[in-house]
Length: 590
Ligand SMILES: [Zn+2]
Image (cartoon, rainbow, N blue to C red; front, side, top):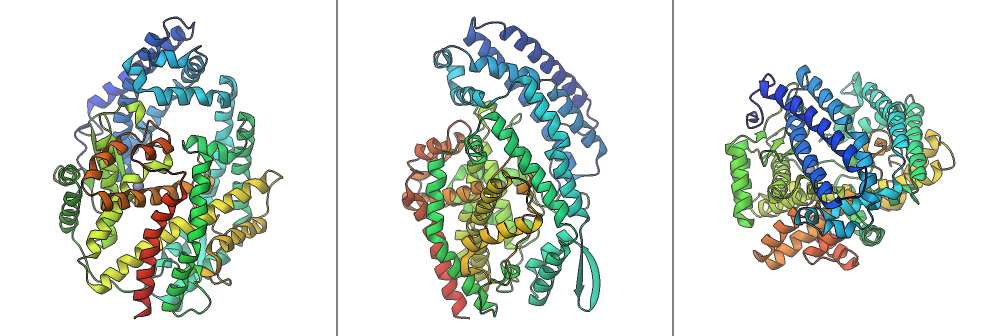
């Protein structure tokens, strides 16, 4: 069950690939020449701006066709050397346009009356948001020489340290004794044991993991200090008040939204703690939940689903919501948009890729026959539906900020879970409900602890590097504030900063609150759907079409949601709290 990519190219040896690479080079050359002319003066600004945007769109479309194809091939076959080579080549070609692009952005930002220029033609008006955003970012842009310097210094700075972190984590061996056999296991394998049905295995894996950091913590701390130190330096040079301000601006989200959401989260923490304590009791603990049992299964599930059954269930549930979404899912299955099963050389996990050049999507997953796989499939098809809803938008209007990128996918998860729960056996329903609450616990409580940690780390790092012990201390403080007495104080996880990749992305800081936003925003939309029924659907589709061309606040407002109003966040959290209450009730009767 491999996906069909022939709508892009017949194979890696398709001569069209060479032709398109040549065409892409030509476009980049055209772009550089055009920018030379454009930047000479402000004359005929609307005509020149429109010409530039159209050329940029064509270039992007072609680059995404080529880049999309080779990255899909390489994710389904990581050993494919040709794909790796082409990926590199495409990057090189596009890099030649970076300097011109900075000059173009600079020219645009200094146009005397940008509003009047934008209102000059419908095509420019269509791109008003991204154009104004480019102008607004100008005050944080360094000179083109400095920008080039920062970019090249990153290669030996944050990027190099991120690679080193990957190497340390990838090479880490954990000493673990299971069933009387002593083994040295890779860290990733040991982390997976958190889901093991055997409680002794989970505890041993956790203790072995913590012990293993003795040898690696100093190297990992050096990586984190270097990356976050660079982030602080560059952010300051750009003139941002704080890294959080910079991140919010990049996320098209205002501080009031963040603070309102966090306030509502703090209010609901006691509910999550009650869930953790109830789960602890169900697993035989008396002092709160040990960190190693956060993901522990509370019941054994036996139900298995084939891919065909999963597809049928999803199409049926989607049809209850919207026929267009159901038809798209059916088409994705029939026309092989999905690479279904795990196989050697294929990447793990799941993702959905938008292919705007052909107005289609492709989904990669590793179908595993559990209900979880169905939820993943619904999630990825949610992304595909998001792409479908925005397929008539300009390619320049397709960049959704992080907080909105998971709206449709999370919405679909809720849709399928709610429907499936109604028709399941008690044991299976309990497992699904527990997995749902445990997932929300991660996205709300753990994400809140990550936010607190990262915020505290940036504050301390501004005064110099921290030792591994000091970093661990900050992490424990954050967990105490977030998890409270939900966690057993003897078994928190001071090393959660080591392998979570998000802390090591120099260009995506605070990569935590967008998850909470996405989850709660999608829940709020679902609650709206429950209340309004079919009338909700067309508004929702319009919202999905607009996520790349408005601020987060305006996208929410377009459907009648005020994200500055704490009651909106409270009502989303209430849906989770109700699930928690049901779960606690069920767990106490076992
Ligand atoms: Zn997703």
